[in-house]
Length: 191
Length: 172
Image (cartoon, rainbow over all chains, first blue to last red):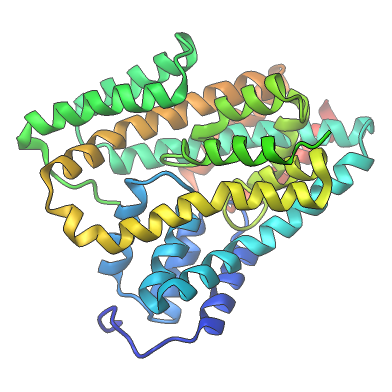
């Protein structure tokens, strides 16, 4: 088992390289699994408990889980510099790739075959995102009354066209008040 | 026309909506990038979003492509910084205060309350995205098959995206 999170100082370069590798190989989403296998299993920079704790923090915050995890883990390992190295590493490969996708897409428009293939890719993305959402919901929603808030959010955004920040604050506030009163349900969502 | 300030504004705003995941910001992304600023068309947005799902790393890197299409390399860099710097800063601060925040009842309630709302935002994003990307029975079938396959097996999603590209090229 990995020893406790406090570790012998890890170099900024090492952090950057580890995250660069994750950023370059985590094809098809699921960056979290790659992060865990690198940080917890391979490098033993954090233990499982710390990893779950960091994951819980990302759930309370805006921002992508992968980049927020990079920031949190990098900061714990080596302070601000570590955080910067981690987020730069995890973002760089995908960002460079999508930059070139943008360049090529600009030039290669109006090709029927490519357009058709990309329509297929878009359709696959719908299934992928929905599957991710369902799995996330299964893990983080522990009570039936949570489903009401899920539904309310969807109706607000999709049907009533309430601006997203308003829905976030409104329904979020409502749910927070609900959970604040119903003290019985303070079970932590286990990620 | 200089689009960089608008890109910076829009993508900073979008990043603050991504509770739970990138798709939570999709309805606003679509409204701002397609309808308001006309940086990309709806079809382009959905194509890039799809490709972005297969790219490695954080799954919203397709925003870089929007920056590129709009304003070249400077656009790509501005979008990247605007989208990640504010939330990264926030994560860093909260990460350091975490042990103290955890003890506060209001914070626990807010965190609990955000959990279902973030799932709701993700679902709402899925619905908006699906409306644009599912154009007929072939695309709906592809989405359905990918969805069921992912829930029932551990196949790498990138392979499914690739297979779907092939199906699209042959059938659409």
